[in-house]
Amino acid sequence: MVFFGDSTNKSLSEGLSKGLTTPLYFPEVTVFPDGERRIRVVEEVVDADVVFLKTSSITDNVDSFIIETAFLIDAFKRSGAKSITGIIPYLPYCRADHVFRSGEAVPLEVIIHLLESAGLAKIVFVDPHTIKMPEMFTIDVANLSALSLFAEKIKEIGVHPQSSVIVSPDMGGLRRMEQLSEMVGGLAFTSIEKDRDYDTGDIKASGIHGDVKKTCFIVDDIISSGRTIVQAVDKLTELGAEEIYVFATHPVLSEDASKILQNSKAKKIFVTDAIPVPQSKYFEKLEVLSLSSIITSAF
Image 1 (cartoon, rainbow, N blue to C red):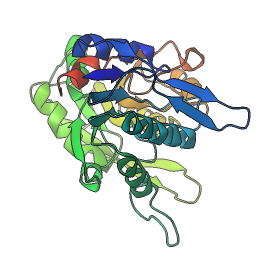
Image 2: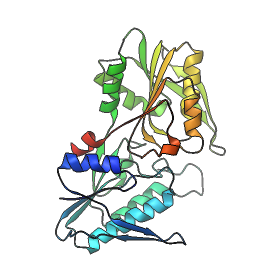
Image 3: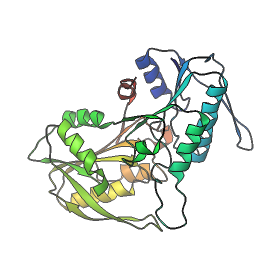
């Protein structure tokens, strides 16, 4: 195996290199003044099983990320790699998995086709936004989850069945709640009902299915603008919650999410290094958990 890390996520790259017990290499990436990119693989990969990490950057353009990933796969293929496995914890456009309104494209299908056509043989991702995403690929898929990391942290904070509850910020996360509940001893779980305006993107928490308790653990797959989480936190506080902890696998943290989350009534925000959080996006309530052990266990 030859492993290539992502220079924008050196911490996770180093953790994976250690866990896979293989040297760490980085591809050469050149960005020209007009924005075009050149990818070059210097190390010998002829007849090798190549594994690479590619994580979307909060500060980079997601479309550039997709193109750069496709170029990287093509570079490995042209350099003689026997097989190419991509560790891509968060795949941009994962929320665009179907037509929401007439006349729209399905970006996720386009991206999957692009990566597979470039020569990707296997993909490893973590907590996909939709359960049907693995089925959209024709190549091998390793579908991993950060829930065990979250379960460990919840146990550290303290699980009290009479006064604690796991909360999904929307109805779509109930399967995730069931799995996490089992990991922490059968803790009760509930979900918040929300309404979304697909024209404006505005979200409103309209109700809750279940009981609100003193300590709430909100668990989601993505934190983007932070508005959904804050709506959930406000609704739980309104209904009597006193301590609220937030867990999310993918810290997209777009726009003013960091400021919004820091100023929220949540006590702590836990995310993973599926997406590297730049220093400019860090805030006091944030804690980053590493996925390295979960990902290396898949090899």
